[in-house]
Every structure is written in structure tokens, then in C-alpha cells.
Length: 561
Image 1 (cartoon, rainbow, N blue to C red):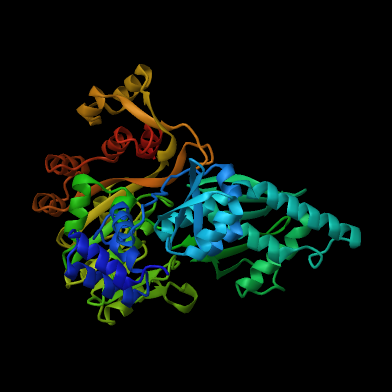
Image 2: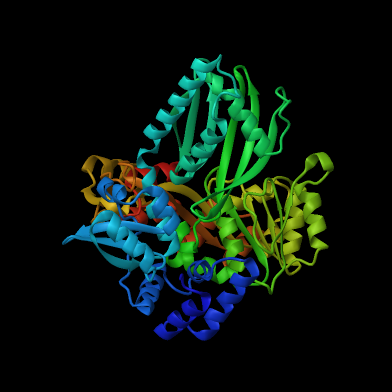
């Protein structure tokens, strides 16, 4: 039997590191949002993931299996078939002295343990592991799915061709799409592109921000595949000349994934892009986003205030929306009313009033924000500030006792102030309402399973000095070492796994307010901010290079962008 909330509470309170009050608060949030207690405990920073796993394992009387970044060999994966591993929620992660080390959500499941013992002919050593870590380990079963998938499609298309001229009805489009979605989810893809390039249908995945070809199909499968997507998304199957947008959901490893669909008519027929939105894949804490040290302390301090305006800035695709959703999740309790106006709604959040911008119906960011202010909100999220009207309403909302979160397109944190002025906002209102600016970029995260230190070449260091000069921290110059992933099974031999943010966090202090009121130049604002400890994006990136989180090339590329 898997751990109940009562057992989880008992175990962590008994550890002495978490109080009864903290657990009670987390349990109420979990109940209000219909989410697992374990997720709330981790994302609210009440307890660290690894320590939680160890505590629960000790409570059960079993050793703990930390499967994070654990690479599983083909030999281990073949011992237990994927279907059985997924059904029983188990994974074999090591063999030693004739014993299979088996990680389970329920290490007291004697029936499953005995069955695996008979099946493998090995003695079993049972370990407890956390559900999310088990999901990540189970995803490694998809290492060979590409070749298996191509073989299955090839066989079906070949069989259909022998029967008759291949048509959409002959092809296994339901199984094809289901397998494609499973493959994309296991690869942690954010987007699936289905494109007809004339002589073939190309399937591409965007993983960690990079688009790559993964499969090729005969063009004859295009019509059936697009029709299946339209049916799932409740779109018109008889419309082929106009773009269509829709949504549907599917489940992967017990997690619900929302899919945002875009169908676009092109020269070679209709293409599709499917955006996969998984709440489980989102960073759970501010630290997971990449906020550390002083930057983390500033953000945590500002989020404890009941009013003000917090802006996330950067170009499209830099993670602004993910950051804002993460902050909303942390602020989401039964004690506050949260309302949003978005375009589009990326994720559904429990107990949050989310509204979609609909220009055709006259519902714009500005109009939606006006309506939200009549809905008794405590916290407001405006997807993006695009014009003077939205900027003015957001500023006035922040000045009248609301906490306003929004995003803006600027290159850096300091540039937010002239951007708001360009939109027509008054300097005295900006200074009075703005409390925090988070500028960010995303960089590839080094794979922890195959990390190795590499000395930075003198030529690269000299080029860095020439370009950035005094912006480079002294401690980096004293110890010019970086770390890179060498490639392993966990990262598909790429050296990177996932992405992390590098940030500029600008707190609007009294000194900076005075400069905003005076419409001071940005270089003067930056100098004042640096005296208070402000770090540029490059400085934050170089700190992450030294910590082995990313590479020098990634950090510099992001800082330039």
C-alpha cells in the first residue's frame, strides 16, 4: 500500500525538521488544489526532495533509492518489461552480488517483489523512491522507441499498401499519434512539428529549446494524422483552407499533459504544431528556475508583500511565463483571490480565475484587466503589457493594494524603465508602483550524470576579458574552470539535460525610485543598482558556470542575446 497523507505527515514531523503547523498548511493547500501533498512540500520549500525521500524511506524501514539523473543500462531495462514496470510502478536500477536493486513506490508490495524474483531469477533488494523520480527513470524505457516506432509504422503502411491504395482509413493513425505523443512526452519535448516537405512527412521535436528531426513518414499518412488531431481538438475536419487552433489532453506516467494545437494550411497541405504543456515538468521551486543567493532572497522578500508590481522581462521563449506561473503557484492559497488575463492560457491552475484574451469578442488585456479589478482580486496576472492602456491600468492596480504580475519585452532589467516610459506611463507612477524586475534567459543545463571539469583556454578567456572587461567577477578570473557533460544514457549522449534560467533581479529601492522620478539615464540607474549588489545576467551566468550548472559558451550566448 502506498503512503497515505497521514503517514507522510507523521514521518516528516517525527524527523524534527518540519513543524506540525507547516505540514498542516501544506496539507490544506494540497486539499484546496487537489494535488499530492509531496508536491506541495517540495515546491513550497518546506522540505528538500532528497531529504523527504530519505525520511519516508526510513519511516517505512527501507533504504532510499535516489533515481535523479540515474542512468539505467539496457541490461537492467530488459529485465523488467516496460508495461510491467509502468503498471507496478517499479524499476530495477542496479545488480550486485546476484541481487537486483528494485525501486518501488510501495516497497511493502510483497506480491510484486516475489513475481519479479521469479521472473528474473535474482534475489530482490527493495528500495523506496519518490513518484516523480520513478517517472523520470521509467522514461528511459523509451531509448529505443524511435527504431521500434519506425518499424511499426513501416509494417502498417506496407500492409495497407498490399491491401489497396493507401488511404487515411487504411493507416493506423490512432496508434501512430498515441505513440508519437508518448515518445514526445518521454523525450521532454515542448513542441511536436508535423510538416509535409513535398516528398515525405517530417516529424520534429523541440527539446530544451532546440528543434530536431526525429522521424519521417510517407506523405499519405498526413491526411489521417491531421484529421485525428482535429477530432481530439474538437476542430472542423472539413475545413482545410483556414488556420485552426484547439486543445486536447492525454496522460503520460500518471500525469495529465495539455496539448495546444495549431493547424496551418500550407502549399503541401495542412501542417500541425502541438505544444505539450505538462504541469509535472514545470520547475517546482524558485531554485529550480535558477534563482540563487541574493537574487533568490530578494524575490522571496518581495513575494511576501501584499502589493506592488513584479515584471518578468526578456525575449519570446526565455521562460517568462514559466517564472510567472511558478510564482503564482507559490502564492496560491485559500486566503487570496487570484485572477489572470492571458493570451493564451498555458496551464490550468486550481482555484485561480483564468481568463483568455478574445479580441474578436472585444476582450483585450486592457478590457479584461478592468473587469478583473471588479472581481475583488488580491493578486493579478496580466500575461503581457503591450500598450499604454494596459500599462496604466496595471500600474493603478498595483497602487491600489493589489499585487500585479506581468511580462514585458526588454533586453535587460534596467531597460524595463525606459520601455514603460515609451509606452506612455508617467515616471512618478512607475517609481511608485514598480517593486521588482526579473530579466532572464534560458541556458542548457549540464547533465549531472556525466559531468567533467574542463580548463578554459587562455584564448577564450582573453576574448571574454576584451568583450566584457570589468563586468567579469574577479573570482571567475582567479579560477577559470568550467564543467561539461561528456554524454551518457540519461542525456542521450548530448551532455545537457533540461534548461535553467540566468537572471538579473532589480529591486526598486528608494534610491532607484528617485532616479526614475528624475528620468535618469539607464547607466546611472545601473551604477546605483550595482552599489546595492545588483548582478548582471553575465555575472549570474558565470556563477552558474563555476557551479557546473552550465557551460561558458551557453552563458555568454545567453548574455549576448
